[in-house]
Amino acid sequence: MTARAFLNVETSLTGRRWIGPSAEEDRLAEAMAQQTHLPLALCHTLVKRGVPPDEAAAYLQPALRDLLPDPLTLRDMGPAAARFLKALKGREAIAVFADYDVDGGASAALLLVWLRAMGHQATLYIPDRIDEGYGPNVPAMQALAERHRLIICVDCGTLSHEPIAAAVAAGADVIVLDHHLGAETLPPALAVVNPNRQDEDGGLGHLCAASVVFLMLVEANRQLRADAVQGPDLMALLDLVALATVADVAPLIGVNRALVRQGLKIMAQRRRPGLRALADVARMDQAPNTYSLGFLLGPRVNAGGRIGAADLGARLLITEDEAEARALADRLDELNTERREIEMRVREAAMAQAEARGLDAPLVWAAGEGWHPGVVGIVASRLKEATNRPAVVIGLDGGIGKGSGRSISGVDLGASVHRLADEGLLIKGGGHRMAAGLTVDAAQLEAAMARLSDLLARQGAGSAGPADLRLDGLLMPGAADRDLVERLEEAGPFGASSPAPRFAFAAMATSARRIGESHLRLSFGDGMGPKLDAVAFGAFEGPLGPALLEGGHQRFHLAGKLELNQWNGRTKVQLRLEDAARA
Image (cartoon, rainbow, N blue to C red; front, top):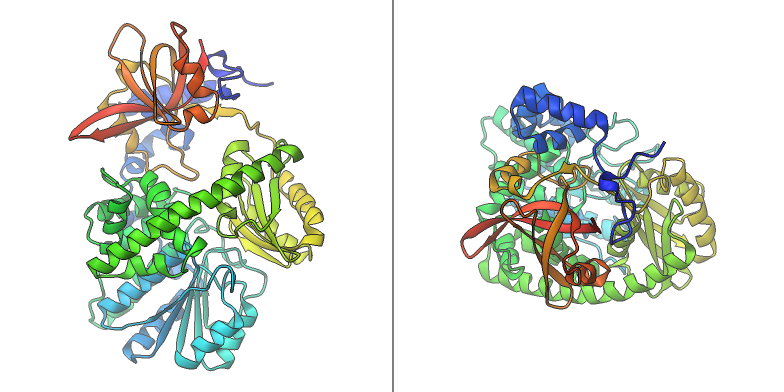
């Protein structure tokens, strides 16, 4: 039996059905509020996360020291840290081979900054996305092995059997610090530290590569202390871990919550020249949060690997030179603008193709000749967000397609892509639960996507309606004050697998005005208390903006996320408006 639509909104202005808390969730939230004296709205948020009343206090104040796992619970961690320290003590030449995204760049920066603090310089190598593709390749690994005794592959390498074998044959030891799904056999590296190895229990499978690197540095510091040597300050590196965790869309659960929360505090101190310069060029005018990491800083760090020089982002994160930091930040900002223009063209074509194919299948996908490989992942994210289904977008060139996919909560895309590669439908493919990459022969494209759709359907993809908007509850404008918003933020940070709470306001009188080309400002109230402000970015790109602007005396149900808007030294509560329906 289908649950009754929340506030009876079967079809909102954006075509979505509103789903509110279940009767059981309402009961549990009421009980928690009585037992803990926490605001009812916060209790709803905690209930949705499965937090019982007796664990609420600890959940709201996650302590890294309590949640950080023992690094040695990961296989090969001991040998990896020992070989790393041996190279340091012996002043061996070390190379860091990193992926070209934020997670790879931050992972490399962690190692290079740590080594620099210990008086040792290492070589950074990041492959070109177009010329070399993802992960280690034989020529690059052979060349590095000729000049380095130790090669550390970060955010890549778990499936790179042949390139790692080539490096080993050339006389180098290789350590892999990764989080992508592993195969049944591992490459011939000295150590493969990866929570998503087949022989791991999956308990730390939500870690990004930078967190795996951080854990190795924790173990390295521990081994140094055993020799009465003081290692670098690891807490000062958590801004890099937080950036990678959010940008790589790692689930903000368990230790990830604590890593990101502490990392945001470190980032707010603005000590790292590269991130300080990037925040300035992105015009960040308030303390960093997961939005600024995911939508302001992350895309700019990524821009070099997508359409520019692959190592720009990592170099920005590593530099100690203020002038270099400003120059790199400016260049990445320019590349990010260029990337947005390329993305818009590909997104329009991909959405048109996906709509023609149908948006109600378990998998939404599109492929096009000449689509830039640097933007297909972002476009896949846009398709996923628009349809609430896993999405794959592929750029074709010379009969070969290189694509990227993004998944939804509860559907493991990486495992399915890996299976397709095993079955021979892909030239290669891999990834993790929420994101994957693949290479496919154009002649196999239709068969591969049909098979992937079938595998994802078995995990439940396509069963949730694309129009569902899930709400944590109902609020009156007078209850949405600064204290409530600050208490709600204690349940954060919010992001993948831990969405920010979303509330509805029923039958509101509204006053709207347009801002620029596509944004909407709104003031609303119930006539009995203070009014609230709301903002809806991109509202005029769809039906939401015109309907509210022309609403007249019509009352509307409003839905969105509460936030604190800081401007000119003042802090006000506002609603980030996502949807509305006529009351």
